[in-house]
Amino acid sequence: MYGGIQQIDPALLESAEEAIEEINSNTNLSDEDKKARVAAIQTQLAQIQASMTGTAEGNEVTLNGGTVAGKTYGGSVMGTGNAEGNSVTLNAGSVNDDIYGGYAANGSALDNTVTIKGGTIAPAASLYGGYSTTESSGNSLNFYVKDVTVKNLKYFQTLNFYVPAGTTAGETMLEVTDAADVSGAAIRAAVEDTTQLNPGEVINLIHTTESPILTEGTTYGMMDGKDQVTDVNLLQRTVGIKKQDANTIVLYVPGDSPITTDPGTKVIPDERESGTTLISEGSDLAVNEGFESALAAHEAGWIEGHSIKAKFIPYVVLGGHNLRYDTGSEVDSNGFNGEVGFVKRSYHEDYIDTIMPFFEYGDGNYTVYYEDARSDGDQRYIGGGILIRRDKDDGFHYEGMIRTGHFDGDLHGTVSGNHIRYDTDSNYIAAHLGLGKTYVRDTNEYDLYGKLYWARLGSDTILIKNDLGNTTYELDSVDSFRTRLGLRWTKNKNESKSYYAGIAWDYEFAGKAKAWHGDYSTPSSSLKGSSAFLELGWQTKVTEEDPWGLDLRVRGWTGKKEGFTYSATISRRF
Image (tube, rainbow, N blue to C red):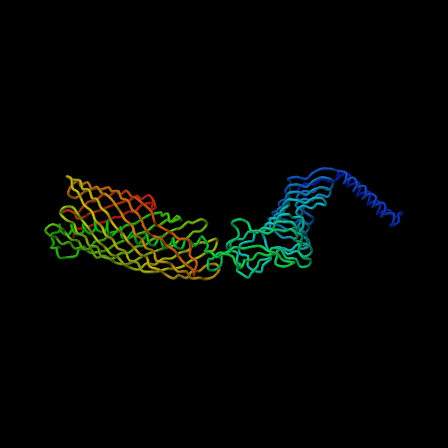
């Protein structure tokens, strides 16, 4: 099979073949005369061929199936001239004889390419890059498969080996049964992260069963960005190439190869960041929507005319979020937060005290994107807390809260093509302090406030199951410490209906998460930075005429945290 060929006129060849056939069938000639006359014709053909000039340039042969019984040439020049820039690509099918990127009988073979991506090659076949008796230069082999045996390997000046994913120690990519000559060539290799290779192990790139590999002037090197392998512990080592012995060129892990965690393991601390933000959303719900819901429940009880000064009144609030966080990765989080509690208010000469014990539950899911790694999972928490607040007649108010409970979650993801999964659970604790002042002007209220939030998600030891086996990692505890400065304007349409709008600025001072395996840590993840929100809400209160109350609120976030949070409170007079 030829991509392009320069040769004698086919009509002349056919005439010569007929003459040879006539000579061989002539019974009046002796065997010696037959041999002499056939040799004369063949000499004439050779002389004609040698006198011809031409080039074979830029021809391509691509095999996607079927069987080639004879030799395969990207470009062939049988006379005088160069074979240049030709190629043969085997994707599928079978080749039973030699493969030439370029063939120049009386010229130069330059910049020809043989690419083997699939299919089968007969063990008796040979691989030649650019065959020439004068000059062979710039010819390349691109090799993407393993367990291939050929007879000879010659006339390549660059050999690129792309080790297939899943290749394990001890396997061989190219076996040569006769002669392998890579003198003066550059041999390069690329490995996938999932290639299984540890210190002391090798993968054979070229191995000969008979003659030693000729390697005078040969150089070796790995391709940029394709020189790392990952082990069961998700640790990476750098791979090298060397001639191990006279018959073998191998990939190996040098003894002094630096060890680092796979960059994709950053999705592990990102899971912790998502959990921390889910818990933090619970603090926001309790301090803001929870307090408003408790007040609405208390006012509904007042209107009913019951004696509630010494009683705890139940309340319920529900909220949710759809947020994205920039932690060095992109973390998409969706979740639900709920709170069931009891409120009691005590009235004094110039202030009102509010106490709110509550139970809480949160549930969410997340997706993390980092370079070529991704993870998804579910998270939830359950716990309780108490909020205490004092509202003074001069408009000042201050509050404190503490929450604690249990968190659990899971992760399913892909790190450098390696599927990983784990479950985690730990305890959490969170606290809050707030101070503000409300100004009243006619039917308008202006609430200027500052808040401090702290939350800690405890550490954990996790068992990570992956494609290569199981390993353990230590999850560091995560502390979040953030402040908020804000202003809310409320317009009271009448005694029962109002709408409000607000702006606020958050700053996270900490929020750093990290995971460890032995002495090696994953890339860290951080929530540190600024965010701001705009909130809008509408409220209708319970009255003697209407037993139902409703408070709807939505916040739009920008900055380190982007997206929306929302809540709904329904109150009922019984």
